[in-house]
Length: 203
Ligand SMILES: Nc1nc2c(ncn2[C@@H]2O[C@H](COP(=O)(O)OP(=O)(O)OP(=O)(O)O)[C@@H](O)[C@H]2O)c(=O)[nH]1
Image 1 (cartoon, rainbow, N blue to C red):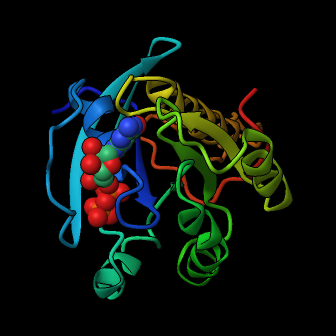
Image 2 (cartoon, rainbow, N blue to C red):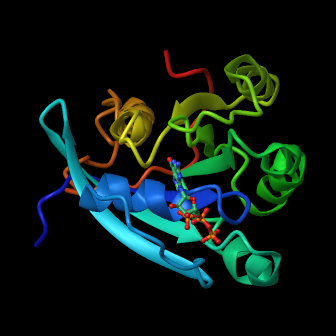
C-alpha cells in the first residue's frame, strides 16, 4: 500500500504553448524538456511531496491547449481539486483568452475548485503582460496568482507546494474531530477532499 495521507488532483489548462507541459516536467522530473511537441489530449504525472510531516500525493493532469482537444480536456475538470490556468507573459493573445478559459472552468469544474492563475516564462526579456495586470486579473476573479519560469525553475516548486499546502489545509479543516460520540471515525489513511473553499493570493 502506498504511503500517503492525502491525494489531490491538479489540472493545468491554458492556451497551447504557454508552457504547461514544461511546468509539470520541471516540477515532477526537475528538467526543462528540449523541443517537445504539443500535448495530445491529456498527460498525467504523479509526485508525492511532504508538508508538515504529511505525505501528499499530487496527480497532475496536463491538458492540451489546442482547441481540437477541448472536448477531451473538459472531462478532466470535474474531478480537479485545483486548476492551474496558465498564460505566457510574453504573449498578449494567451492573456486575452483567460476569460474564455474561466467560462470553461465555470461550466465544467466544481464551483469550489482552487483556482490559480500562472504567468509563465518570466525568464524572457520580451514581456507583454506586466505583473500587476496579471495580479489584478487574478484578484478580480478570486484566484491565486504567481509568475513562474519553467525554464529557470523559478517559482515552480512554490506553485505546486502552495497548492498542496492549501488543499491540505482545506482537507484538514474538514477532518476536525466532532464531539457527538457517534461521528464516523477518521482512521482512513487517505483523504480526498471534496469541495473546499478558496481564495486569496499566494503571499
Ligand atoms: N523561455 C521560456 N520558454 C518556455 C518556458 N516554458 C515553456 N517554454 C517553451 O514554450 C514552448 C511550449 O511549451 P509547452 O510546455 O509544450 O507548452 P504547453 O502549454 O504544454 O502547450 P500544449 O501542450 O500545446 O498545450 C516550448 O518551446 C517550451 O520550450 C519558460 O518558462 N521560459
